[in-house]
Image (cartoon, rainbow, N blue to C red; front, side, top):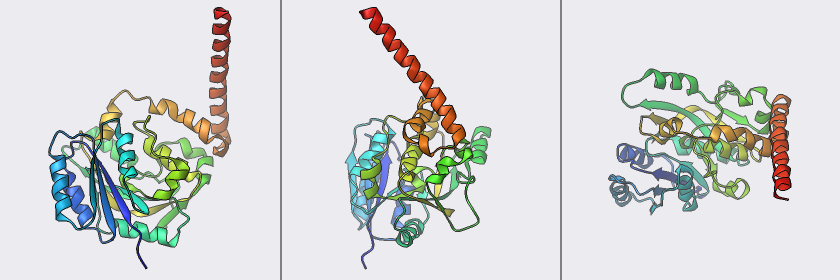
Length: 291
């Protein structure tokens, strides 16, 4: 029986420092067939040269596309639009797949085809000095699924996650960073792509939109290595002025309110109904002034 094609999507921008290591981890995968999609945001270093050399050195299909920068979500989405696989697997230019990563994740889908997405644990690669800030971050976020995992190889979660009182407790992302996930491409027609207006929370908003419609599996062991360094987009975004967290509750109110715990329902309903009343009051006042 023919095995399903997996598209490995690698969005890049000035990724020369670690891209070769990431690509070598693709070459070393024990699963095939694979294709690689490299979507580059007009890198100014030798990212494209590394990508081109890799393409010439492997037998698997490699597509390299140049993308006009418009935020990380736009580049993620661009890579997916060029994917031909049954499944999409993200790999960031900084990170590394363990050799059995894709094989093990596809095997889970083979046994449970009703799933929408599979995630896994990750090990860390820390570049440079381990500062107190980085150490604190690792200690806080080393296990994103700790709130609901059990002593089992695979944890299945469904929309009941939203109704837990601790759903809004930290960490907000209870699934994993994009390099930890593999998902069916066909679900994009139901849930859409990553929200390009978001900068920091677009990954787990995307996952939760999937979870509304499909169960998600967590493989309770590390299948990737997630690199932490000062230049990565996550750290840049964390230090920038970003309003994602201000609008996350509004997203929950508009899209997830019926699924939430009663405590969160009440708080969000009060917050946004009050805002709606103020907005309507302002509209009436402006209308009165203009008349």
